[in-house]
Every structure is written in C-alpha cells, then in structure tokens.
Figure 1 (cartoon, rainbow, N blue to C red):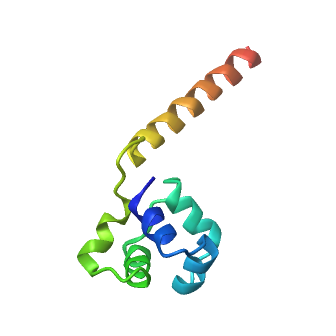
Figure 2 (figure 1 turned 90 degrees about the vertical axis):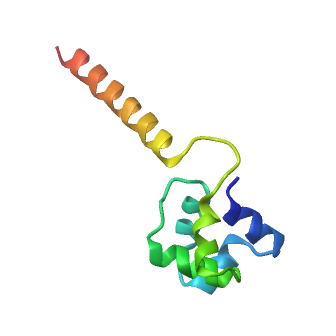
Figure 3 (figure 1 turned 30 degrees about the vertical axis):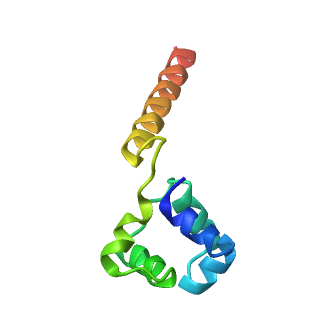
Length: 93
C-alpha cells in the first residue's frame, strides 16, 4: 500500500472524496493508488495539498513498503505482451 492510500484512509476519505477535492477522475486516483498510473508532478502537488502536506512531502505519496515498483510493473507488462505476440506469431505460422 502506498502512502497516499494510508493518508487518505486515515482521514476517512473515500477515493471519490479525494478525487472531488483535487478535481481528478476517481478512476485516476484509484489507478495511482494501485500504481498503474504515474501522476504528473502537478497532480502529485494537488494530492499533497488536499492531504495537507508540504510540497516536498507530496513526493513521498508514492512511497511504499512492499510490492513491485512502477518499473517492475512495466517490465512485467512488457514481458507478457512480448509472450502474447510470440504466441500469435506461432499460431499464424
């Protein structure tokens, strides 16, 4: 779980409530929390402000204590896409 989720839940806010406060789509907040979307700096600053964090602290919202990093997620996705393309090529032959 990333720090953004922990702070949001500590405040008792739903994703919809945080989304409303920062004027972002609830799905985008969910994707950021699930680490499937890397936010722009401006989005990270808005999230930090809404949660009462200083600008420098907002950078830590994506910190996590366990699980894959964004790079590891991307590598896994690329590997699965490459395998899928390989299987499609085999069936066409």
